Image 1 (tube, rainbow, N blue to C red):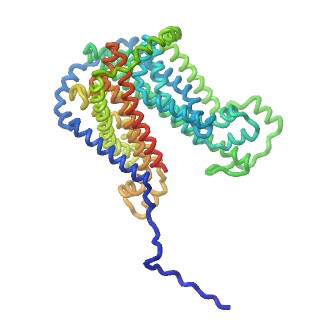
Image 2 (cartoon, rainbow, N blue to C red):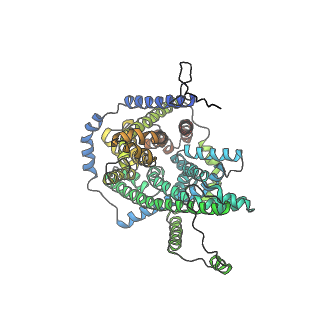
Length: 578
Protein backbone atom coordinates (compact mmCIF):
# COMPACT_ATOMS: atom_id res chain seq x y z
CA UNK A 1 0.00 0.00 0.00
CA UNK A 2 1.47 3.28 -1.01
CA UNK A 3 0.84 6.60 0.57
CA UNK A 4 0.65 9.62 -1.63
CA UNK A 5 1.78 12.85 -0.02
CA UNK A 6 -0.37 15.75 -0.93
CA UNK A 7 1.53 18.81 -1.97
CA UNK A 8 0.34 22.04 -0.46
CA UNK A 9 -2.17 23.75 -2.65
CA UNK A 10 -0.77 26.65 -4.60
CA UNK A 11 -2.55 29.92 -4.55
CA UNK A 12 -4.04 30.66 -7.93
CA UNK A 13 -5.67 33.74 -9.24
CA UNK A 14 -9.12 32.29 -8.58
CA UNK A 15 -8.36 31.16 -5.00
CA UNK A 16 -10.14 33.14 -2.28
CA UNK A 17 -7.95 35.69 -0.57
CA UNK A 18 -7.77 35.78 3.20
CA UNK A 19 -9.06 38.98 4.75
CA UNK A 20 -6.76 40.78 7.14
CA UNK A 21 -9.37 43.37 8.17
CA UNK A 22 -12.98 42.89 9.16
CA UNK A 23 -15.60 43.86 6.63
CA UNK A 24 -16.88 47.38 7.39
CA UNK A 25 -20.33 47.41 8.93
CA UNK A 26 -22.99 49.92 7.86
CA UNK A 27 -23.56 50.86 11.51
CA UNK A 28 -19.86 51.55 11.99
CA UNK A 29 -19.69 53.71 8.88
CA UNK A 30 -22.78 55.64 9.99
CA UNK A 31 -21.29 56.14 13.46
CA UNK A 32 -18.05 57.44 11.93
CA UNK A 33 -20.01 59.91 9.80
CA UNK A 34 -21.98 61.11 12.84
CA UNK A 35 -18.80 61.60 14.87
CA UNK A 36 -17.23 63.55 11.99
CA UNK A 37 -20.42 65.63 11.67
CA UNK A 38 -20.31 66.46 15.39
CA UNK A 39 -16.64 67.42 15.08
CA UNK A 40 -17.46 69.64 12.11
CA UNK A 41 -20.33 71.25 14.04
CA UNK A 42 -18.03 71.92 16.99
CA UNK A 43 -15.43 73.55 14.73
CA UNK A 44 -18.18 75.64 13.10
CA UNK A 45 -19.49 76.72 16.53
CA UNK A 46 -15.96 77.61 17.64
CA UNK A 47 -15.50 79.84 14.61
CA UNK A 48 -19.00 81.34 14.62
CA UNK A 49 -18.66 82.41 18.26
CA UNK A 50 -15.31 84.03 17.38
CA UNK A 51 -13.40 82.24 20.12
CA UNK A 52 -9.68 83.01 20.11
CA UNK A 53 -6.85 83.61 22.51
CA UNK A 54 -6.71 87.27 21.52
CA UNK A 55 -10.01 87.78 23.34
CA UNK A 56 -8.47 86.38 26.52
CA UNK A 57 -5.30 88.44 26.12
CA UNK A 58 -7.28 91.62 25.51
CA UNK A 59 -9.26 90.90 28.67
CA UNK A 60 -6.24 90.72 30.97
CA UNK A 61 -6.80 94.36 31.85
CA UNK A 62 -10.36 93.60 32.90
CA UNK A 63 -9.10 90.64 34.89
CA UNK A 64 -6.60 92.85 36.71
CA UNK A 65 -9.32 95.39 37.53
CA UNK A 66 -11.59 92.60 38.75
CA UNK A 67 -8.82 91.20 40.95
CA UNK A 68 -8.27 94.65 42.42
CA UNK A 69 -11.96 94.84 43.31
CA UNK A 70 -12.00 91.37 44.87
CA UNK A 71 -8.81 91.61 46.94
CA UNK A 72 -8.54 91.39 49.83
CA UNK A 73 -11.22 88.75 50.17
CA UNK A 74 -13.95 89.58 52.67
CA UNK A 75 -14.92 86.47 54.58
CA UNK A 76 -17.99 86.59 56.81
CA UNK A 77 -17.66 85.88 60.54
CA UNK A 78 -16.60 82.33 61.25
CA UNK A 79 -19.94 81.43 62.80
CA UNK A 80 -21.89 82.64 59.77
CA UNK A 81 -19.45 80.97 57.39
CA UNK A 82 -19.71 77.62 59.16
CA UNK A 83 -23.48 77.95 59.16
CA UNK A 84 -23.62 78.57 55.40
CA UNK A 85 -21.18 75.75 54.67
CA UNK A 86 -23.06 73.39 56.97
CA UNK A 87 -26.41 74.23 55.34
CA UNK A 88 -24.96 73.67 51.86
CA UNK A 89 -23.46 70.31 52.80
CA UNK A 90 -26.68 69.28 54.56
CA UNK A 91 -28.81 70.07 51.50
CA UNK A 92 -26.38 68.26 49.21
CA UNK A 93 -26.24 65.15 51.44
CA UNK A 94 -30.04 65.00 51.75
CA UNK A 95 -30.50 65.44 48.00
CA UNK A 96 -28.02 62.66 47.25
CA UNK A 97 -29.71 60.41 49.81
CA UNK A 98 -33.15 61.02 48.28
CA UNK A 99 -31.78 60.28 44.80
CA UNK A 100 -30.06 57.09 46.00
CA UNK A 101 -33.20 55.76 47.69
CA UNK A 102 -35.38 56.47 44.65
CA UNK A 103 -32.79 55.03 42.27
CA UNK A 104 -32.69 51.58 43.90
CA UNK A 105 -36.18 50.40 42.79
CA UNK A 106 -35.82 52.27 39.49
CA UNK A 107 -32.52 50.50 38.80
CA UNK A 108 -33.94 47.10 39.73
CA UNK A 109 -36.71 47.59 37.17
CA UNK A 110 -34.32 49.03 34.58
CA UNK A 111 -31.70 46.25 34.82
CA UNK A 112 -32.09 43.49 32.28
CA UNK A 113 -31.54 40.64 34.78
CA UNK A 114 -33.87 41.88 37.56
CA UNK A 115 -36.71 43.63 35.74
CA UNK A 116 -40.29 42.43 36.09
CA UNK A 117 -40.92 42.63 32.35
CA UNK A 118 -40.38 44.59 29.19
CA UNK A 119 -42.93 47.26 30.07
CA UNK A 120 -41.42 47.82 33.50
CA UNK A 121 -37.89 48.06 32.10
CA UNK A 122 -38.96 50.52 29.41
CA UNK A 123 -40.79 52.67 31.96
CA UNK A 124 -37.81 52.70 34.32
CA UNK A 125 -35.44 53.65 31.50
CA UNK A 126 -37.78 56.48 30.49
CA UNK A 127 -37.76 57.77 34.08
CA UNK A 128 -33.95 57.74 34.09
CA UNK A 129 -33.64 59.57 30.77
CA UNK A 130 -36.31 62.16 31.60
CA UNK A 131 -34.76 62.87 35.01
CA UNK A 132 -31.42 63.57 33.32
CA UNK A 133 -32.96 65.71 30.59
CA UNK A 134 -34.88 68.11 32.87
CA UNK A 135 -32.43 70.74 34.21
CA UNK A 136 -32.28 70.91 38.00
CA UNK A 137 -32.61 74.69 37.91
CA UNK A 138 -36.04 74.33 36.27
CA UNK A 139 -37.07 71.87 38.97
CA UNK A 140 -35.84 74.36 41.56
CA UNK A 141 -38.02 77.11 40.06
CA UNK A 142 -41.07 74.85 40.16
CA UNK A 143 -40.44 73.62 43.70
CA UNK A 144 -39.73 77.14 44.90
CA UNK A 145 -43.27 78.08 43.86
CA UNK A 146 -44.60 75.03 45.71
CA UNK A 147 -42.52 75.02 48.90
CA UNK A 148 -41.12 78.53 49.16
CA UNK A 149 -37.81 79.27 50.89
CA UNK A 150 -36.01 76.45 52.65
CA UNK A 151 -33.80 73.48 52.02
CA UNK A 152 -36.63 71.30 50.74
CA UNK A 153 -36.58 73.06 47.35
CA UNK A 154 -32.92 72.27 46.79
CA UNK A 155 -33.20 68.73 48.13
CA UNK A 156 -36.00 67.80 45.74
CA UNK A 157 -34.57 69.65 42.73
CA UNK A 158 -31.11 68.09 43.00
CA UNK A 159 -32.47 64.77 44.23
CA UNK A 160 -34.92 64.15 41.40
CA UNK A 161 -32.46 65.30 38.75
CA UNK A 162 -29.74 63.05 40.22
CA UNK A 163 -31.94 59.98 39.66
CA UNK A 164 -31.03 60.23 35.99
CA UNK A 165 -27.35 59.56 36.66
CA UNK A 166 -27.52 57.40 39.80
CA UNK A 167 -30.32 55.20 38.46
CA UNK A 168 -28.43 54.50 35.24
CA UNK A 169 -25.19 53.58 37.02
CA UNK A 170 -27.07 51.48 39.58
CA UNK A 171 -28.77 49.54 36.76
CA UNK A 172 -25.42 49.01 35.01
CA UNK A 173 -23.93 47.65 38.24
CA UNK A 174 -26.84 45.23 38.70
CA UNK A 175 -26.45 43.92 35.14
CA UNK A 176 -22.76 43.18 35.77
CA UNK A 177 -23.22 40.98 38.89
CA UNK A 178 -22.17 37.36 39.19
CA UNK A 179 -25.42 35.43 38.76
CA UNK A 180 -24.11 32.41 40.71
CA UNK A 181 -25.26 33.39 44.23
CA UNK A 182 -28.64 34.58 42.95
CA UNK A 183 -29.12 31.35 41.00
CA UNK A 184 -28.26 29.29 44.06
CA UNK A 185 -30.79 31.16 46.19
CA UNK A 186 -33.45 30.72 43.52
CA UNK A 187 -32.66 27.00 43.29
CA UNK A 188 -33.08 26.72 47.06
CA UNK A 189 -36.61 28.16 46.77
CA UNK A 190 -35.83 31.77 47.60
CA UNK A 191 -38.34 34.45 46.60
CA UNK A 192 -37.52 37.30 44.24
CA UNK A 193 -37.08 39.64 47.22
CA UNK A 194 -34.72 37.19 48.92
CA UNK A 195 -32.71 36.90 45.71
CA UNK A 196 -32.36 40.68 45.55
CA UNK A 197 -31.48 41.13 49.23
CA UNK A 198 -29.09 38.19 49.56
CA UNK A 199 -27.85 37.56 46.03
CA UNK A 200 -27.73 40.99 44.38
CA UNK A 201 -27.42 43.69 47.05
CA UNK A 202 -24.20 42.40 48.70
CA UNK A 203 -22.46 42.43 45.30
CA UNK A 204 -23.57 45.90 44.18
CA UNK A 205 -23.50 47.74 47.52
CA UNK A 206 -19.90 48.99 47.13
CA UNK A 207 -20.68 50.25 43.62
CA UNK A 208 -23.89 51.88 44.85
CA UNK A 209 -22.06 53.77 47.60
CA UNK A 210 -19.24 54.79 45.24
CA UNK A 211 -21.77 56.13 42.71
CA UNK A 212 -23.62 58.09 45.39
CA UNK A 213 -20.36 59.63 46.60
CA UNK A 214 -19.50 60.65 43.04
CA UNK A 215 -22.89 62.31 42.68
CA UNK A 216 -22.34 64.05 46.01
CA UNK A 217 -19.35 65.83 44.46
CA UNK A 218 -21.45 66.94 41.49
CA UNK A 219 -24.37 68.14 43.64
CA UNK A 220 -22.03 70.26 45.73
CA UNK A 221 -21.06 72.23 42.62
CA UNK A 222 -24.67 72.35 41.41
CA UNK A 223 -25.77 73.89 44.72
CA UNK A 224 -23.94 77.09 43.74
CA UNK A 225 -26.11 77.42 40.63
CA UNK A 226 -29.34 76.77 42.52
CA UNK A 227 -28.48 79.60 44.89
CA UNK A 228 -29.41 82.01 42.09
CA UNK A 229 -33.03 80.74 42.15
CA UNK A 230 -33.55 80.79 45.92
CA UNK A 231 -31.89 77.64 47.36
CA UNK A 232 -30.14 78.54 50.60
CA UNK A 233 -26.53 78.07 51.62
CA UNK A 234 -23.31 79.32 50.10
CA UNK A 235 -24.84 79.51 46.61
CA UNK A 236 -27.52 81.97 47.69
CA UNK A 237 -24.96 84.03 49.62
CA UNK A 238 -22.74 84.20 46.52
CA UNK A 239 -25.72 85.25 44.37
CA UNK A 240 -26.71 87.99 46.83
CA UNK A 241 -23.13 89.31 46.94
CA UNK A 242 -22.83 89.46 43.16
CA UNK A 243 -26.19 91.19 42.77
CA UNK A 244 -24.96 93.99 45.07
CA UNK A 245 -21.54 94.05 43.32
CA UNK A 246 -19.82 92.98 46.55
CA UNK A 247 -17.11 91.02 44.75
CA UNK A 248 -14.87 90.76 47.81
CA UNK A 249 -17.52 88.80 49.71
CA UNK A 250 -18.72 86.87 46.65
CA UNK A 251 -15.29 85.59 45.63
CA UNK A 252 -14.41 84.81 49.25
CA UNK A 253 -17.47 82.57 49.46
CA UNK A 254 -16.59 81.07 46.06
CA UNK A 255 -13.13 80.16 47.39
CA UNK A 256 -14.83 78.39 50.31
CA UNK A 257 -16.92 76.39 47.82
CA UNK A 258 -13.73 75.48 45.97
CA UNK A 259 -12.08 74.21 49.16
CA UNK A 260 -15.19 72.21 50.06
CA UNK A 261 -15.33 70.66 46.59
CA UNK A 262 -11.67 69.63 46.75
CA UNK A 263 -12.06 68.26 50.28
CA UNK A 264 -15.19 66.28 49.43
CA UNK A 265 -13.55 64.99 46.23
CA UNK A 266 -10.49 63.75 48.16
CA UNK A 267 -12.53 62.11 50.92
CA UNK A 268 -15.10 60.52 48.61
CA UNK A 269 -12.37 59.40 46.21
CA UNK A 270 -10.56 57.60 49.02
CA UNK A 271 -13.78 55.94 50.14
CA UNK A 272 -14.58 54.90 46.56
CA UNK A 273 -11.16 53.30 46.17
CA UNK A 274 -11.62 51.39 49.43
CA UNK A 275 -15.08 50.24 48.35
CA UNK A 276 -13.80 49.03 45.01
CA UNK A 277 -11.31 46.89 46.91
CA UNK A 278 -14.16 45.49 49.01
CA UNK A 279 -16.10 44.75 45.80
CA UNK A 280 -13.20 42.74 44.34
CA UNK A 281 -12.88 40.84 47.62
CA UNK A 282 -16.59 40.02 47.57
CA UNK A 283 -16.34 38.90 43.96
CA UNK A 284 -13.68 36.47 45.05
CA UNK A 285 -15.84 35.19 47.89
CA UNK A 286 -18.89 34.86 45.64
CA UNK A 287 -16.75 32.92 43.16
CA UNK A 288 -15.71 30.60 45.95
CA UNK A 289 -19.33 30.10 46.97
CA UNK A 290 -20.27 29.38 43.36
CA UNK A 291 -17.48 26.81 43.13
CA UNK A 292 -18.64 25.11 46.31
CA UNK A 293 -22.24 24.99 45.09
CA UNK A 294 -21.60 23.85 41.51
CA UNK A 295 -18.24 22.11 41.74
CA UNK A 296 -16.81 24.52 39.14
CA UNK A 297 -14.25 27.22 39.66
CA UNK A 298 -15.30 30.70 38.60
CA UNK A 299 -13.00 32.49 36.14
CA UNK A 300 -10.13 34.23 37.90
CA UNK A 301 -11.15 32.92 41.33
CA UNK A 302 -8.98 30.65 43.39
CA UNK A 303 -10.92 28.16 45.47
CA UNK A 304 -9.45 27.89 48.96
CA UNK A 305 -8.01 24.61 50.11
CA UNK A 306 -10.24 22.22 51.97
CA UNK A 307 -10.34 22.79 55.68
CA UNK A 308 -11.48 20.65 58.54
CA UNK A 309 -15.28 20.60 58.56
CA UNK A 310 -16.65 22.68 61.39
CA UNK A 311 -18.66 20.90 64.00
CA UNK A 312 -22.30 21.67 64.61
CA UNK A 313 -21.49 23.58 67.78
CA UNK A 314 -18.89 25.66 65.96
CA UNK A 315 -21.35 26.56 63.23
CA UNK A 316 -24.06 27.43 65.77
CA UNK A 317 -21.67 29.57 67.78
CA UNK A 318 -20.49 31.40 64.64
CA UNK A 319 -24.08 31.98 63.57
CA UNK A 320 -25.23 33.31 66.95
CA UNK A 321 -22.10 35.27 67.87
CA UNK A 322 -19.98 36.23 64.84
CA UNK A 323 -16.50 37.39 65.65
CA UNK A 324 -15.77 41.11 65.83
CA UNK A 325 -12.79 41.31 63.54
CA UNK A 326 -11.04 44.57 62.72
CA UNK A 327 -12.77 44.67 59.33
CA UNK A 328 -16.19 44.20 60.94
CA UNK A 329 -15.52 46.92 63.50
CA UNK A 330 -14.41 49.27 60.70
CA UNK A 331 -17.54 48.58 58.65
CA UNK A 332 -19.77 49.12 61.68
CA UNK A 333 -18.01 52.41 62.34
CA UNK A 334 -18.60 53.52 58.74
CA UNK A 335 -22.30 52.75 58.96
CA UNK A 336 -22.62 54.53 62.33
CA UNK A 337 -20.80 57.59 60.97
CA UNK A 338 -23.04 57.57 57.89
CA UNK A 339 -26.18 57.45 60.05
CA UNK A 340 -24.93 60.38 62.15
CA UNK A 341 -24.11 62.43 59.03
CA UNK A 342 -27.56 61.76 57.54
CA UNK A 343 -29.30 62.69 60.80
CA UNK A 344 -27.26 65.89 61.09
CA UNK A 345 -27.95 66.75 57.44
CA UNK A 346 -31.72 66.37 57.82
CA UNK A 347 -31.55 68.72 60.77
CA UNK A 348 -29.10 71.16 59.17
CA UNK A 349 -30.93 71.39 55.83
CA UNK A 350 -33.80 73.19 57.59
CA UNK A 351 -36.36 70.87 56.04
CA UNK A 352 -39.86 71.67 57.22
CA UNK A 353 -42.17 68.76 56.59
CA UNK A 354 -45.09 71.12 57.15
CA UNK A 355 -44.22 72.51 53.72
CA UNK A 356 -45.56 69.30 52.18
CA UNK A 357 -49.06 70.23 53.33
CA UNK A 358 -48.69 73.64 51.73
CA UNK A 359 -47.39 72.04 48.54
CA UNK A 360 -50.35 69.65 48.33
CA UNK A 361 -52.73 72.58 48.72
CA UNK A 362 -50.92 74.67 46.08
CA UNK A 363 -50.11 71.82 43.70
CA UNK A 364 -52.96 72.45 41.26
CA UNK A 365 -52.68 76.25 41.20
CA UNK A 366 -48.89 75.99 40.81
CA UNK A 367 -49.14 73.76 37.77
CA UNK A 368 -51.61 76.14 36.14
CA UNK A 369 -48.96 78.86 36.37
CA UNK A 370 -46.62 76.85 34.15
CA UNK A 371 -49.22 75.78 31.57
CA UNK A 372 -49.76 76.45 28.76
CA UNK A 373 -46.26 77.29 27.51
CA UNK A 374 -45.65 80.73 26.06
CA UNK A 375 -45.44 80.45 22.26
CA UNK A 376 -46.13 84.05 21.30
CA UNK A 377 -43.72 86.53 19.76
CA UNK A 378 -40.88 85.36 21.99
CA UNK A 379 -40.64 81.85 20.48
CA UNK A 380 -38.36 82.90 17.61
CA UNK A 381 -36.07 84.70 20.04
CA UNK A 382 -35.93 81.64 22.29
CA UNK A 383 -35.06 79.38 19.35
CA UNK A 384 -32.21 81.72 18.40
CA UNK A 385 -30.87 81.64 21.96
CA UNK A 386 -31.27 77.86 22.04
CA UNK A 387 -29.00 77.66 19.00
CA UNK A 388 -26.45 79.80 20.86
CA UNK A 389 -26.68 77.40 23.80
CA UNK A 390 -25.97 74.45 21.51
CA UNK A 391 -23.04 76.33 19.99
CA UNK A 392 -21.63 77.02 23.46
CA UNK A 393 -21.90 73.33 24.36
CA UNK A 394 -20.25 72.17 21.11
CA UNK A 395 -17.40 74.69 21.28
CA UNK A 396 -16.83 74.00 24.98
CA UNK A 397 -16.66 70.25 24.35
CA UNK A 398 -14.10 70.83 21.60
CA UNK A 399 -11.99 73.02 23.90
CA UNK A 400 -12.34 70.52 26.74
CA UNK A 401 -11.35 67.57 24.55
CA UNK A 402 -8.28 69.36 23.17
CA UNK A 403 -7.13 70.20 26.70
CA UNK A 404 -8.29 67.05 28.52
CA UNK A 405 -6.84 64.43 26.15
CA UNK A 406 -3.16 65.33 26.77
CA UNK A 407 -3.73 66.17 30.42
CA UNK A 408 -5.65 62.95 31.01
CA UNK A 409 -2.97 60.95 29.19
CA UNK A 410 -0.24 62.40 31.40
CA UNK A 411 -2.39 61.63 34.46
CA UNK A 412 -2.60 57.93 33.52
CA UNK A 413 -0.08 55.79 35.38
CA UNK A 414 0.70 53.61 32.34
CA UNK A 415 1.28 56.58 30.02
CA UNK A 416 2.98 59.23 32.16
CA UNK A 417 6.80 59.31 32.04
CA UNK A 418 6.98 58.84 35.82
CA UNK A 419 4.64 58.37 38.82
CA UNK A 420 5.41 61.93 39.92
CA UNK A 421 4.15 63.30 36.60
CA UNK A 422 0.97 61.22 36.86
CA UNK A 423 0.32 62.47 40.40
CA UNK A 424 0.91 66.08 39.36
CA UNK A 425 -1.59 65.95 36.51
CA UNK A 426 -4.07 64.07 38.69
CA UNK A 427 -3.78 67.03 41.03
CA UNK A 428 -4.42 69.42 38.12
CA UNK A 429 -7.57 67.50 37.20
CA UNK A 430 -8.70 67.50 40.83
CA UNK A 431 -8.11 71.25 41.18
CA UNK A 432 -10.12 72.04 38.04
CA UNK A 433 -12.95 69.74 39.18
CA UNK A 434 -13.12 71.67 42.43
CA UNK A 435 -14.06 74.94 40.72
CA UNK A 436 -17.82 75.17 39.97
CA UNK A 437 -18.59 76.06 36.36
CA UNK A 438 -20.63 79.03 37.54
CA UNK A 439 -17.59 80.56 39.24
CA UNK A 440 -15.56 80.04 36.06
CA UNK A 441 -18.35 81.70 34.10
CA UNK A 442 -18.26 84.73 36.40
CA UNK A 443 -14.50 85.05 35.92
CA UNK A 444 -14.72 84.78 32.13
CA UNK A 445 -17.64 87.21 32.00
CA UNK A 446 -15.38 89.73 33.70
CA UNK A 447 -12.52 88.99 31.28
CA UNK A 448 -14.42 88.76 27.97
CA UNK A 449 -17.68 90.53 28.80
CA UNK A 450 -21.24 89.25 28.70
CA UNK A 451 -22.15 86.71 26.06
CA UNK A 452 -21.50 83.26 24.67
CA UNK A 453 -17.71 83.64 24.57
CA UNK A 454 -17.53 83.62 28.35
CA UNK A 455 -19.81 80.59 28.57
CA UNK A 456 -17.82 78.58 26.01
CA UNK A 457 -14.46 79.27 27.66
CA UNK A 458 -15.84 78.60 31.14
CA UNK A 459 -17.36 75.26 30.16
CA UNK A 460 -14.30 74.35 28.09
CA UNK A 461 -11.92 74.85 31.00
CA UNK A 462 -14.37 73.20 33.40
CA UNK A 463 -14.60 70.15 31.15
CA UNK A 464 -10.95 69.36 31.85
CA UNK A 465 -11.89 68.28 35.37
CA UNK A 466 -14.37 65.54 34.47
CA UNK A 467 -13.15 64.63 30.99
CA UNK A 468 -9.51 64.54 32.06
CA UNK A 469 -10.35 62.11 34.85
CA UNK A 470 -12.38 59.89 32.52
CA UNK A 471 -9.59 59.88 29.93
CA UNK A 472 -6.98 58.92 32.54
CA UNK A 473 -9.17 56.14 33.95
CA UNK A 474 -9.89 54.74 30.46
CA UNK A 475 -6.22 54.67 29.52
CA UNK A 476 -5.32 52.93 32.77
CA UNK A 477 -7.97 50.24 32.24
CA UNK A 478 -6.60 48.94 28.91
CA UNK A 479 -5.04 45.50 28.56
CA UNK A 480 -1.42 45.99 29.65
CA UNK A 481 -0.38 42.79 27.85
CA UNK A 482 -0.50 44.47 24.44
CA UNK A 483 1.64 47.32 25.71
CA UNK A 484 4.23 44.90 27.11
CA UNK A 485 4.26 42.91 23.85
CA UNK A 486 5.11 46.05 21.85
CA UNK A 487 7.80 47.09 24.32
CA UNK A 488 9.36 43.65 23.95
CA UNK A 489 9.76 44.31 20.21
CA UNK A 490 11.71 47.50 20.93
CA UNK A 491 8.89 50.04 20.48
CA UNK A 492 9.36 53.35 22.27
CA UNK A 493 6.86 54.97 24.62
CA UNK A 494 5.15 57.02 21.89
CA UNK A 495 4.75 54.02 19.60
CA UNK A 496 3.25 51.94 22.42
CA UNK A 497 0.82 54.75 23.21
CA UNK A 498 -0.51 55.16 19.66
CA UNK A 499 -0.35 51.50 18.60
CA UNK A 500 -1.58 49.72 21.75
CA UNK A 501 -3.07 52.10 24.34
CA UNK A 502 -5.13 54.48 22.22
CA UNK A 503 -6.78 51.84 19.96
CA UNK A 504 -8.03 49.93 23.01
CA UNK A 505 -9.33 53.03 24.77
CA UNK A 506 -10.77 54.72 21.65
CA UNK A 507 -14.41 53.55 22.08
CA UNK A 508 -14.41 54.65 25.71
CA UNK A 509 -12.82 58.00 24.83
CA UNK A 510 -15.48 58.72 22.21
CA UNK A 511 -18.20 57.78 24.69
CA UNK A 512 -16.67 60.09 27.32
CA UNK A 513 -16.57 63.03 24.90
CA UNK A 514 -20.22 62.44 24.03
CA UNK A 515 -21.09 62.30 27.72
CA UNK A 516 -19.25 65.59 28.21
CA UNK A 517 -21.25 67.12 25.33
CA UNK A 518 -24.45 65.98 27.03
CA UNK A 519 -23.29 67.50 30.32
CA UNK A 520 -22.17 70.75 28.70
CA UNK A 521 -25.51 71.18 26.98
CA UNK A 522 -27.31 71.27 30.32
CA UNK A 523 -24.58 73.37 31.92
CA UNK A 524 -24.72 75.91 29.08
CA UNK A 525 -28.35 76.49 29.95
CA UNK A 526 -27.44 77.19 33.58
CA UNK A 527 -24.51 79.53 32.90
CA UNK A 528 -26.87 81.96 31.23
CA UNK A 529 -27.96 82.85 34.76
CA UNK A 530 -24.81 84.97 35.16
CA UNK A 531 -24.82 86.44 31.65
CA UNK A 532 -22.69 83.78 29.93
CA UNK A 533 -24.99 83.67 26.90
CA UNK A 534 -27.66 81.29 25.74
CA UNK A 535 -31.18 80.54 26.78
CA UNK A 536 -30.47 80.46 30.51
CA UNK A 537 -30.64 84.26 30.72
CA UNK A 538 -34.26 84.18 29.51
CA UNK A 539 -35.00 81.38 31.96
CA UNK A 540 -33.81 83.44 34.93
CA UNK A 541 -35.60 86.61 33.81
CA UNK A 542 -38.84 84.72 33.19
CA UNK A 543 -38.77 83.26 36.70
CA UNK A 544 -38.10 86.68 38.23
CA UNK A 545 -40.96 88.44 36.44
CA UNK A 546 -43.29 85.46 37.02
CA UNK A 547 -43.64 84.58 33.31
CA UNK A 548 -43.86 80.87 34.04
CA UNK A 549 -45.19 80.05 30.58
CA UNK A 550 -41.81 81.12 29.22
CA UNK A 551 -40.13 78.85 31.79
CA UNK A 552 -42.15 75.93 30.41
CA UNK A 553 -41.23 76.82 26.84
CA UNK A 554 -37.54 76.95 27.73
CA UNK A 555 -37.90 73.60 29.50
CA UNK A 556 -39.54 71.94 26.50
CA UNK A 557 -36.97 73.30 24.05
CA UNK A 558 -34.05 72.28 26.24
CA UNK A 559 -35.62 68.89 26.91
CA UNK A 560 -36.00 68.19 23.19
CA UNK A 561 -32.36 69.02 22.42
CA UNK A 562 -31.00 67.10 25.43
CA UNK A 563 -33.11 64.05 24.52
CA UNK A 564 -31.82 64.18 20.94
CA UNK A 565 -28.21 64.25 22.14
CA UNK A 566 -28.96 61.52 24.71
CA UNK A 567 -30.46 59.18 22.12
CA UNK A 568 -27.63 59.88 19.69
CA UNK A 569 -25.05 59.15 22.39
CA UNK A 570 -26.81 55.91 23.36
CA UNK A 571 -26.81 54.74 19.75
CA UNK A 572 -23.16 55.64 19.23
CA UNK A 573 -22.08 53.88 22.43
CA UNK A 574 -23.99 50.79 21.36
CA UNK A 575 -22.34 50.76 17.93
CA UNK A 576 -18.86 51.45 19.28
CA UNK A 577 -19.06 48.65 21.83
CA UNK A 578 -20.61 46.13 19.43
